[in-house]
Image 1 (spheres, rainbow, N blue to C red):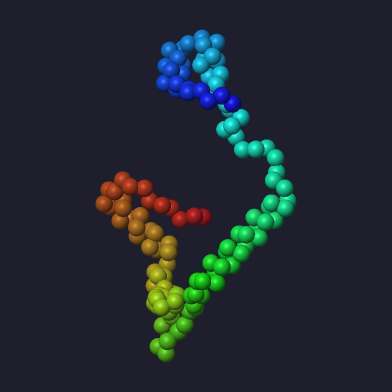
Image 2: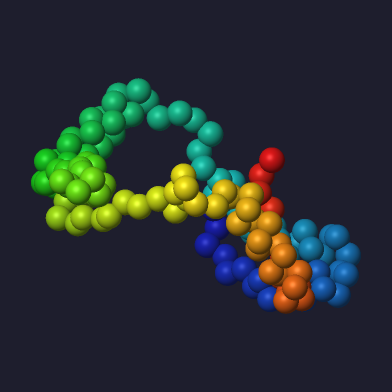
Length: 128
């Protein structure tokens, strides 16, 4: 491979001015297209085995250094459900309670509201 400086601006100008194909070929002859691609061969199995062992050991070391985070659900004496993630506690509540309105009723109310207000935004329809 030659160490030749390639003037990409010159090539670009020639393309933009619809230069003849022969001129473009002469301008691009020093570009080594084969150096732009990955090799087409598989590495030896011994190399792949060493790489696999290295990354498995690396991952194992990382996992040893990280403390495990407890994740679980628990209910208190009042029946409130909590989700625990490490030291964080999140109260779990229902969005659609059994005695409340159904999804269909809420969707219908939303459609009526949007129609009444004359909104032009799209409404996401429920999947059927």
